[in-house]
Length: 480
Image 1 (tube, rainbow, N blue to C red):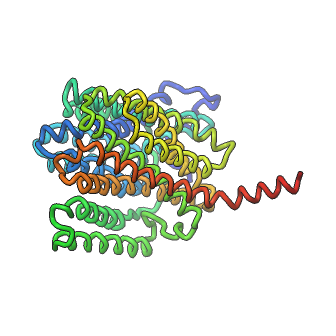
Image 2 (tube, helix red, strand yellow):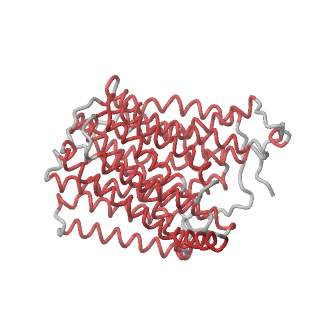
Image 3 (tube, rainbow, N blue to C red):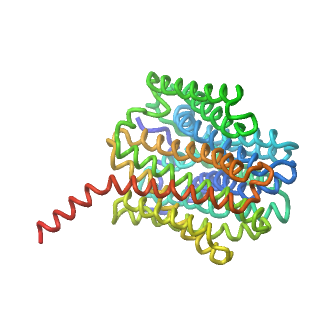
């Protein structure tokens, strides 16, 4: 049985044109993706400004980034399955309302814990929006127009990624960091009105009603405990009882997560996929590329503003170079993958981003910094944008959905954990949490270490590509 779709969708013109209602459905999904992505990346350039307002260090505010990502990563698959069972229209509206309400709560925050807590709940709303936006479009368009419609929604997602840092910098300098959160409200309201007015309800009639909430809670609590121990270990003492207890709790929750996943009828993550070595290498490499993206976004924002003394606006202008590089590479990645192996393109991208990161730590001219930023962006874009494409070639057709969910979860959760670890390493190298964000040499050291992750991912990808490349070479020599 097909998902429930409004009658007018079934009789829509199959000639490729979009009606007024069609465009409204696309706009609803596109706005939803735009606001999640823009808000995600706008925060990086606001961290120093928020830290000054609350009298805390910028590195301590890394939870605004990592906590948000942790909520999205742990609940993204649950959000998608909830929509399949209870209705995509209903779930995306709930997600947008939660996102808007928590944006208001964030803007009214009077302390760092208040803001972090609201940001995590906002991530729950994003976990309902992020996977469902595309599903709303694919369930509505059942003909050849589906591809262009989905492409438009993903293009708006890329626009949000590109504009996020710039918007964050402009508002932080000329208005207020609180206004950035309030900017979400009218966009969410517009998306909600469009969804309620034009998007018909749809659901998967074959979807089971089992939601792996225990698995999501276990992985979220496990990673949160480990991140908390890493973040606070220097202050508590690495061998102190609070640090050790928190670490043990984190490990225990992750062990519980594995046990739950093995027994769950509809697991959050299919652990059997990890028996595929090529799938593992590609997923890990793509996750490392996303780690590079997260760390360069956070650390470069601190470096430009607190070490180099740039205003949020001027830092945002330079960040447009990184965003343009990522956006251009992401846009062309699919076309390039039609001609060359996705794994090989990923490897070249990770080599490029690793080399770019090293160069970034040595250039002093802001003009050259922007040029290198573009190079880093291109490498990063190829590295993580093709992860899903590359992994799909190494799993059976009936498991591509589970593989895609695992890949997206891995990308986000690795990014969340990496931000916490990097902040702790930066504070350790600098020797003081209060001065770490303005310690240029310490930030450059962490970025050089990050480049090693990019090179490791590239070498792993080249290793799994090598057998096929050798086979091709032998075939060419035999033909000759």
